[in-house]
Every structure is written in C-alpha cells, then in structure tokens.
Image 1 (cartoon, rainbow, N blue to C red):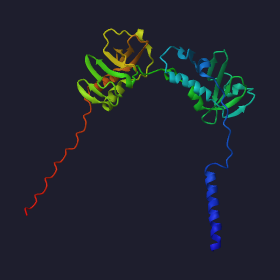
Image 2 (image 1 turned 60 degrees about the vertical axis):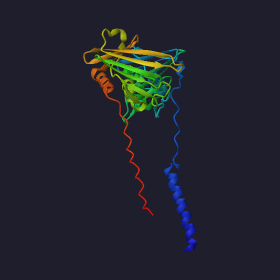
Image 3 (image 1 turned 90 degrees about the vertical axis):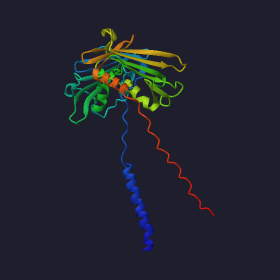
Image 4 (image 1 turned 45 degrees about the vertical axis):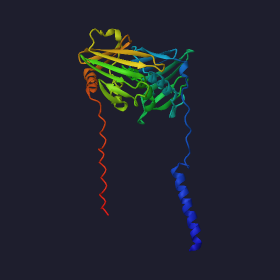
Length: 327
C-alpha cells in the first residue's frame, strides 16, 4: 500500500492541474480579435452626421471646437462630442453574412434605417450603414463604405452611435471649480443667502466657511456648493437673447479666484415663466430651463443651518485619592 501512495499523489496533482487548466480555458482555441472597421484621428475630422429615420444630426469641428449645425445649435458637452469619434473607431463586425452583398434589399441595406458618416478634412468620408434587425436577437445587418460586404453587427455598437440631440447637450447651467470658489450669493424671490470662504489659502474641504453669519466647516460647506453644481435640465437650451431678463426672480453670484489670486464674479440670472425658471449667465449665450421646484429646493438648502459638531464626551473628574490611615 505504501508503494502506491506516491502514485496516488501524482494522479491527484495531475487531475488538479487538468481541472485548473480547463477552468482557465487553456484548451479552448482563442478567437482573433476582429480589426476595427474605421480608424480616424479626431483632429482630422471635419464633421460627422447621424441619420436615423427622418432625423439628422450634424456636428462640425473647427479649431478643435465642436458645434451642432443640424437640427439646431445647442451648447455642446465636449466629452460626448469627442467620445462619439471614439465609439466610431471601436466599430468591429461580428461575422460576415454576405461577402458580395448582391441583394441588399433582403438585408434592409438598399435603404438603410440608420447611417453614421464621418467626413475628414481632406474630403473623404467613411459611412456605417445599418439595415434590418437579424433573427439572432441583439444583432443587425450592416455594411461599411468601400466594401460590398454585409456583416453582423451588435446592437450595442449601434446604440453607442445613435445618439439624440439631447445626448450631446451640456445640461448644467452653472459650473463651479470648487478650489477657486471664494463665495456664493443666492437671491430668490426677495430672500438672500450667502456662503463665504474665510480661509482662502486652504483647500475647500479644509477651509472654514460662513453661511450667513454662522461658521461652517469645509466638509459641511460642500453640500451647498453641490446643490448649485448639480443643477441640470432635461429640456433643450435656447439662445439667451430669447429670454427677457427684466426683473429676474433669481440671481446667483459666484466669486472665484484664479491661481494668481485674481478675483472675478460671474452672475447668473433667472426669469420665471409659468412652472419653469430660465437661467442664463449674464452676457452668456444660452438659457437653461429648470422647474421652479428645483430652484426652490436650492433656496431651501441655503436656509438649512450648518451641521453642528458633535459635542465631545464630558470628561469624568478624576477620583480623589483614598485617604491613607494615619500611622
């Protein structure tokens, strides 16, 4: 029996090694990663278009800045505008359906339901055309410019490109750089509130602040700034000139200082129209719509007293030493 023990140990080790290798897919043939369909450099892109159904969106780039020309101009979120190019560069086919693409009608590609086109500064274009949905759920028939091939493309890739106008819009009317903020004044329907940084040489979360005349620690001041920073609209912005700001019900002043210590004040005005407040930076280009209730929540936040520090536990008096018996 003792002679069999080394053999049994060897068998156990081999079985364990085989099981581990199987769990790590060592015995499965690895699939080659399909090459990307497109590769464009952002600085070489003049414009791109998104056609879906009867709608068309076009963005143009000049000197590194994006503008929307169709269906109408809006304030753009630069991250989304640039990110769309990244998604285009990540496109890859799943498999070939018809290498020659002789009958495009059967795939819905004679009249594509969606088209995504990138135009370069040299005038060349690259277009992804998307046709009918496949019977295999989650995939579509598609083809790429310059090739007759019809291939299988995942819905997730299509969705990353099929953005709506609001997906591109910058939705925040006010942007704060917390470390540069020196103070905020909020006036809403006659009531006034102030938040002022008293330790201007410290980080925002380390500094002392004042809410009105009450002292506030940095960590407790952040929620008041957050309430302004996180204001966001779900409605299309419109040119600020279309909103008459006579006798505005809302006024927000943000006092900031740059790295050299130079201070500036940015003013935002808000005008009530029915159930909304249209907010625009003074002399700014765009106005944003927020519900009156949202602005009221902002004012209510500034009404809240700052959080009081928890009292430290009372120190118990030291017991007096026991009297020593006289000798």
